Image (cartoon, rainbow, N blue to C red; front, side):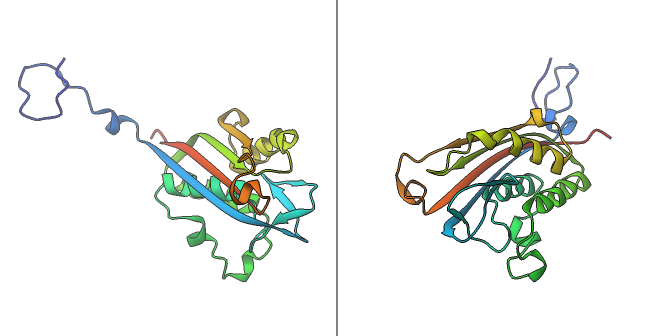
Length: 183
């Protein structure tokens, strides 16, 4: 079978459609960083975690959900979280980031894509968040209307290095795969 994409291939063999014309898949990457400060709630993945510090931001500063939003928006070529929810807009002051994530999920769907999977990593020295990860996955699943089986959330420390290691802030990364909905 001829696999050359060139029209000059004249072996008389049947050429398959290029895979990118059959199913379009896109990868997105998101990253977010927030400072840890006193007198703020620590909300990660939509879960309020007991801790003496919380993340500083215009919204609830959920660093995990913000990274997921950016990954999905990037994969669908829809910009970033700042474009859709600017921190200069008072309507987003203190907003629950699960609402932002739900809206991003709708934007991805309206663009003709479905979410194939999400893989996110939280980086912070403390507190330990492992006991909360399953609830985070459930919250993300509900906000996006996808199976929890498509969502991975992990956490790690930075081994006391950098701002995360000094408990001055937290970082989250997310990669995602979206695919064009079959028509």
